[in-house]
Length: 228
Image 1 (spheres, helix red, strand yellow):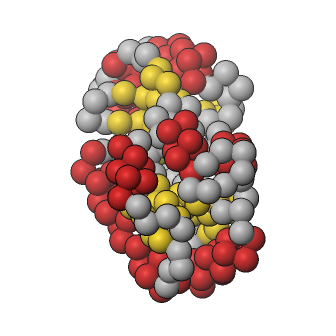
Image 2: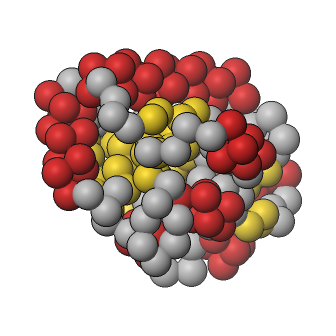
Image 3: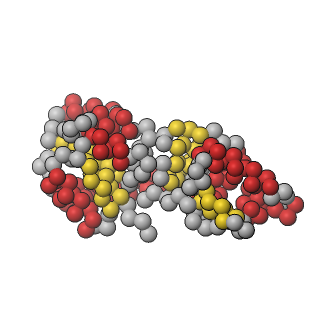
């Protein structure tokens, strides 16, 4: 089972190491960043369970970075700050921060807050029927697919096929299984219909065939891992 991964960004290496070690002791994975540019690079094609951002970082403050990435990062964002002014907190909340923790902080309190936010976010995602696979978001409630924060226009059948494959990620599904799940009565259908739809989906979201893999003679497999 994949560990929930937390991105920790602070220009103070000792603080980053302390937080990372404490989270790893609690069963989390940790990715370290030391400036705003690091955060931009590390969130381009990877999803996280939560982001911890220091407000005062070189090459982009926590506020600036949050404003830049908020549309494509759905995970909770918690600011770490030496500032305790209400104005800073108001600005942070207005641009999408979920919480603040002020230095000096108790590491036990920080870990507790991280756990609480991730639990809440998981419950919220379950209610929304939204699933995140790397840089791809599939929302069953709205029939929307977003890649890198950009909406991808899929037909209803294309969405249903993608959703069905994603629900069974890393499992090989035959064209007959896919047809039966989406259209019903596979014994009466033309299996080339599935092939054409898969091709259309790939052209729109997966031109390099990394997410949807063809297993020759068997069917197709969705390889995107569900984000923690």
